[in-house]
Image (cartoon, rainbow, N blue to C red; front, side, top):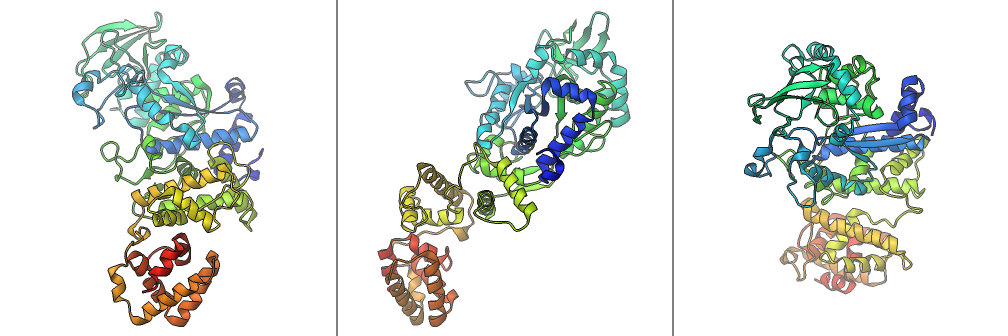
Length: 556
């Protein structure tokens, strides 16, 4: 793909815009020649990371992939902002254990779990260790290590040499009372207590290139400094920028050409506006898309899963790492790729059929990609194919996988009391699994049956749940003579031969018209099998059950 017209898919459009901007800007050409087309995102590992952050990661990953598909070196770099200060307690940590670390960089705080280098390392890896499942290909960087190795030294000097200009930008955008108006644009790490959230830099000696600072006991309400006063070099890990300045400094230091964020950061006069102005006026670097010189642009909309129903911290929603235990990551990636970034997305699988519909949508896109289903509209066809390419996790399959819809799978697993092995036998008996099936396809069906079981247990509304009654339900006694007679005849019809699903479905409907009404017959059949008036599609359901059991049960 080399032009916007060749793909109307949003990720390809962004890739085209990025390439077009770079090709029209000599400075960016030099940046890209050295570094490639860097698409950036970053996260402070202050605790369990919300699924909403995953939207930004998937968006950025998709655009980096689209850049590579257009023949350039697209890179997704995700920064771990591990040098940020610990400023509040998640409600799942013991206050008495971690209170003494308030104000320290996250990378210098012990991990809540064994096997990780630090607090920052644990919460960051909790997510990034799941990236393979989401199909996210990212280069991971530690912001603290970037400071240590001097990556920001040039921008640190530029910022400190232009302190007044940065303060004026804060004043112009955020007002006279903004904290950025009153201090130097750098937070040193106290050499005595190791805290960064309690230090105040009050003088920059440009000749000696040292910062004079105090570690104040009263600077912030959430941490107490040690009172030490001294001076140190700001370079090579001596501290960090305030985050709005840091955002702007990362762009020229790393060579970023694209970086988005949630829409809250892009509000007029907000953090992105400040960063854009600093990048433009102080660092003389063209801000990455979706921003431009002095233009903030727009971020992506919020993404929540289940609202507060699966809270990880203060009812704020499910964590990125946790969601993969409940909803297949490839389905969430598909949902996020399918939905344009600036569309609001609240996906609530609880007590609804939304997850069922998402599976159906994914399966439909997969069939279109492999030519099993058609789209008359060429644009829609191209869109669905591109959606599948960018949403798929792992190498693209060479042929259409053996599909069993989640609704059908959930019906089969319930009819066997969640016995996966028996469920496979039923699907073989009904012809849904051919006699000659590859191990790969069989594994694919097993996964779908397992997920169907999980859907029934965790998410499905009551209307999708049932238990096949071992004994004749008491409700059968309430059936009229006509209804019982109809069930007897239905038993005879089913017993005449080995039916195909569509054939039996037609036969049941035709029979129902003669004897009762379809509604009455189905109600009678469900009461006999399940003890409830509604159930799954009758022909499909009957064929999933033991034949002898069905024939005897309808002889009422």
